[in-house]
Length: 229
Ligand code: FES
Image 1 (cartoon, rainbow, N blue to C red):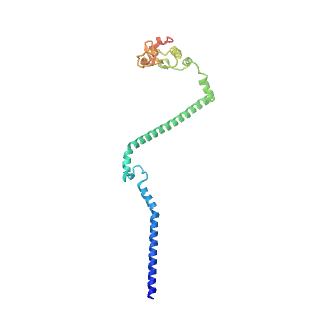
Image 2: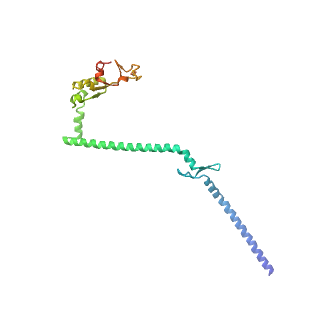
Image 3: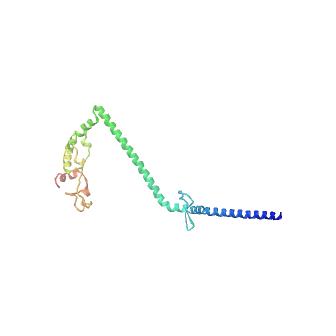
């Protein structure tokens, strides 16, 4: 009976030891399995994700030393300022372009409606009216000067273009009574120094670069009438 009791105790003790060994083995297995996960978590903690501007967290670690977002923000301040200025300039340009596009659209609408109204008044189409007013009247500038309605005593004329055409235009204007002091000519000559020194642009007594290039006709009348000067 005693022998049976001892055998039972020894058997239970052996079973307990076996169970403890199994628990220990299982614990070791869990530690080994969990190690890569823990290692990854540790690695993740050392490479934080980029922080938002103004974030006071840690941007990175260098040799175990943290580099704060505050330092990063300070270092980036000048560059960020430039970026903000560029953004503001871009927005201003965008607003200006938008305004110009709408202004141009408004001008087109106004122009078209004025043409429609005038054509309706004349009982013709817009195309017919433009042909009559523009294409049929196109011709030499002298004809325009003859037909144009203006008060010669209150007129100032500015003429530019080929010199031959300007000679005829000046004649037509003065023939209509515009005084030579009120007619201005824009002369063109090849220029080099642009300070009245080299003589490239010289026109008799005048230097186009220094004295012009826009002259009152009264000032240059005698030399302007000489061809090929
Ligand atoms: S360009 Fe030289 S004098 Fe006019």
